[in-house]
Image (tube, rainbow, N blue to C red; front, side, top):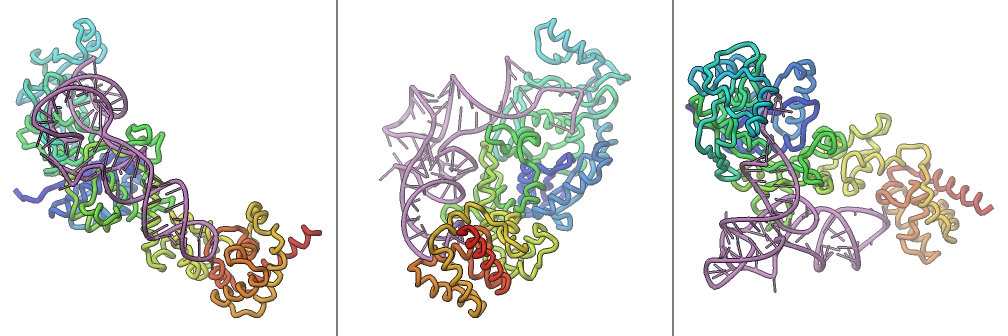
Length: 469
RNA sequence: GCCCCCAUCGUCUAGUGGCCUAGGACACCACCCUUUCAAGGUGGCGGCACGGGUUCGAAUCCCGUUGGGGGUGCCA
């Protein structure tokens, strides 16, 4: 027996990767790596999933995106559930032979009728002592022993269940296929799993699984149930109502590092965060510091605003080349990448997501800027707008074309109107970018070039002449 | 119905009987800085669900109430 722990992560392929699953995966990953253990990926390759290989690939890609990579020595898998199909049935057979399970030929209808007749809820072990053998249509049920089952949980402590409240549950269906409960346990056994870290929703079923482990003669794994992620209604995050797909956040310009960091703050706090005044920490530090004992017990709301805030911070920490590369997928193919690289440092602290990038600099890549009406109304209707623009055009025709001279030149011009730079730059900004907000003006002008900038300023001036009529 | 879990600012959380007049982060508000918008800086608003105990002392321990969530399938 090797002493190194084996953590399992067992997502079912559904076409998207749940952010809650991502957090659980991260917890397992941190544990596996910091303990010198193994992260074992097991995938349920149902018929449907087998027909859609992209689903399985999606899981692997999503895990890789958040840094859980298959080429890491701590990563094992993917293992597929179908590989253990024989073991499922063999285990069922052993359970039957050892008396831990028995066959029952009652149909769901019969069970319900008898329950009503006897005034009980659910199945009351009616076939326990009938000595039935396997037969078509009969199910195999687990014979729940008397007593108390205590689940030792690393995050919640000991949780006890009175076995009287657990009915004899089905292990193998009438058609001969094993149910999830059995398959899951057998898979974990076959994979040599020592630690099960999963979402809290599985806690009520854990005593059943533990009983199966024990009936099969194995020491159960060490359990840990982490709180679920919920929406603003405090309900478990669901695909229908909530934005839960990790891929969607990725596609909307969230950086993997930001997502990972944010996910780790849900239910866990990095030691020292309070003193540091921040919750932003590099993964290696979180990985080393993560302890299940420190995970809290309450469900957490997935707050997109905070995620985006983390993302902004991670974007600002990128080097300019990294930023340029990261933005690339969001930029129209025809945009000049060299030009974008020039403006990139000036938009870095203006981005919350990578997807924001094109909207901030589009005026540099289009023939004519789209003039925002409100911006025009606000800045061009002042009495100084027109003369100042005209003067600025004159001055810019001969000025050195770099942001420093562009600034000082405009400052010279605005002195005639007794304006401050904040006011004076506005008409030029609207003329050139179409908006009142955007990257620093003189830097943008420098990148744009004299000809195009003057062309736009003259066009705006012409427009003003026209309206003055 | 039965079982299990949970309960600190709007949100994520720190807090394991005195260090708590409850700390931090996000959001929000104000001010500063400023070339617009941001970013950055400073400050502010804001919370221990309720009721009983235990104790010299409770956010912290116990009981109850209320509220929320989950499970209970021949779904996974």
